[in-house]
Image (cartoon, one colour):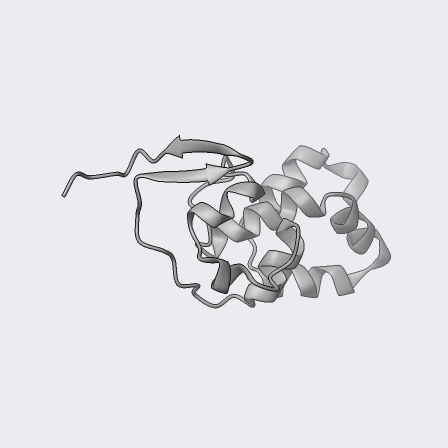
Length: 116
């Protein structure tokens, strides 16, 4: 069945699934497991959006410190798969909006900044 649809279509469908659903799908067959392993970055990045950990797939993994404190991120993993799985589908406490966020040595101004 996997070979009947383009990978892009399958990824679009999978982008709507929750982490528990992805885990169940992975256990369904070797073909699904292999597909999910091959595309895990894309699939779990979309799962982070489904669970509300990030607002869109345009957010890069290295920007997570802009949204969550180091306490929340401690032990959550080094990629979208481990982050999403370790979060366990639970709501994570986001940090309050701040004016800037340092990512990879650069300061970026948040568009949501409001003067007080």
